[in-house]
Amino acid sequence: MQTIVIVGGGAGGLELATRLGDSMGKAGTARIVLVDRWPAHFWKPLLHTVASGKRDAQAAQIDYAAQACEHGFDFHRGEVLGVDRAARRIALAPWLTDDGVEVLPARSLGYDKLVLALGSVTNFFGVPGACEHVLTLDDVPQAEAFHQRFIDGCIQASARNAAGAGLDASLDASLDTGIYPGLDAGLDIVIVGGGATGVELAAELSHSARTLARYKVHALDPVRNVRIRILERGPLLLPHLHPRLSKRAARHLRSLGITVCVDTTVERVEAHAVVDNEARVFPSSITLWAAGVEAPAMCATLGLSVNRLRQIAVGPSLQSMDDAAIYAIGDCASFVCPVKGTVPPRAQAAHQQAMFLAQTLAQTLAHGASTAAFAYRDYGSLVSLGPLAAVGVLAGTVGGRKFQVGGLLARWLYSLMYRKHLMALHGFARMAARTVADWIGEKISPSVKLH
Image 1 (cartoon, rainbow, N blue to C red):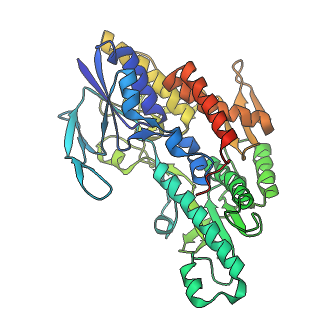
Image 2 (image 1 turned 60 degrees about the vertical axis):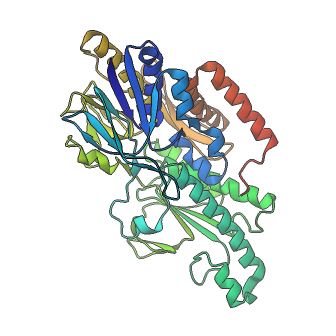
Image 3 (image 1 turned 60 degrees about the horizontal axis):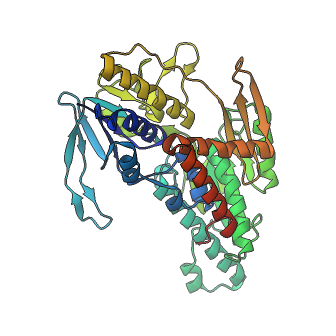
């Protein structure tokens, strides 16, 4: 029995493990193993909702062990340190608790086929101070850390505002959140990057600030005292969309009180400010970096061909160019279609690659080879602008014609993307049950986490 090891339980990796487990794992024709350093899966496109407090990550996560039990694959928790391509083994780091106690020692796993679905990490583009002074949204702990900083910042700024100019020095020191000197009390949030993540987070944060004020978690003016700025290097937000939609999104954000700064290149990041290449200073209590992604550093250590973003170069079968036993999908893979060009790092690309590779690996194990070639189809892109709005483009099934959508219709279609992901993992019945449970939760709970 051959062993297929999948490293990374993101959108592509978990869908691939689920499908291979159902088709080959349960039948006993292959052993399917999923490896991830986290115990549970969270759909990465929704990390901004965790950062804003709109979604409880614990309630929305999918336990890998439970998914493995139900769908015929094995799960091993651990961080991959490297790959011995000659021996066909991957090395896993020791599994330690938060206080440093070893749960499992360093170990290794053998494979016949290895699928790398490592996702992506934040790309700081070498900007001085960015790595030291910003927060990112690469995983759930980072999103939760941002949310906690946001809540604490609102409460502390509210206390400053209530104390006013007569705040004594000792209390001032205890409430210091790094607000830029000379500013009136408030919370300054700078989001670097006007792509989907930055725009979606800004819109949700505006809603969260208003909700927290309504529940009296803070006494700040949600617009005047909670100042949100987006810094985008290019001339438009959401550069992957039509300029008309980009401008529509910018107008909507400005209507929420969010400051949109385009044609703004960040020169450096300081502890309490962001400075652009024209020496303009943007005060910042919290800086979030959402300006781009690249593949994890490990991809460049495997001796495989990679591009400038460390993405592994793969051919039409999604096999690496240098090792037929290794495949790569999702954000860590670089597939260049001779007709349509480079496949973008999106969740829909990872989903399509997972479905393709599930069929390809089944055919390879059954017949010894597969001549199938991956073909990416762009079904469009949707961007959330808060609880009641979204913008995007949908590609038609006939002729590839694209349709621009916005407002409540786009918001409803945006929510369907997550439901489609759940259906790929659980089937229709459980997806529908989760949808009903989420709807009930929204009716009986505050629209954002209050702590």
